[in-house]
Amino acid sequence: MRAVLRVVGVHVLLAGLALGAVAVWGTGADPARADLAVTVPDTDPRLPVNPELVALVRPPGLVVMDTTKEKNGAWLTAVLPEKEARYFTDAGVASVKALVSRDGEFSQGVWQFPVRDGADPVAALRAADDFYAAGGWAEAPGPRDVLVRSHAPTPELPLAAYRAHYVRGPYLIRVEAYGPDAERVHREFEALVDRQLDRWPPT
Image (cartoon, rainbow, N blue to C red):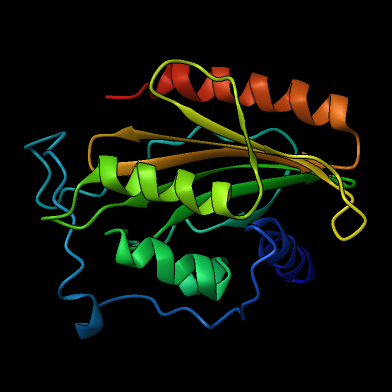
């Protein structure tokens, strides 16, 4: 539990140094989710219920946060700073499934944000990139159809960080890495992006 809270705390700092609180997340059927429907293709018509696809690879290291077991995903306010959660909600994001791992002070993760029916995943992609641009994250080179931002260490946040966003179907996908060793962060980030795109490329 302490590791999970620590991951969330770091994300509060990384989200453009936005101020926000972490709320308790709900699970199961909830009337509040009625307008957050996300339609996914029926990958196996033999199944009576089509589970939502999890388009994420498992990051190396000890997984300290895993919201992929939640049927509807986690509430954004459970794992994102309040400011970022509100921004993503306004952009059409319904919930989040994520896998975040740690190795000492180094962390990396993959995130899947379903975009609700009627909203535009490409608009959500632009919103995510704009959010980090406004927070001072620099544009960085990346693969085709993938938007990448980087954050250099500062006295307030002595961590190097990379975040990539792209669209796959109704999902906004994020790949990230952060830690005090800038060379390792860059190396591990590129390796995780390559694995994620090889398995789940943009569509």
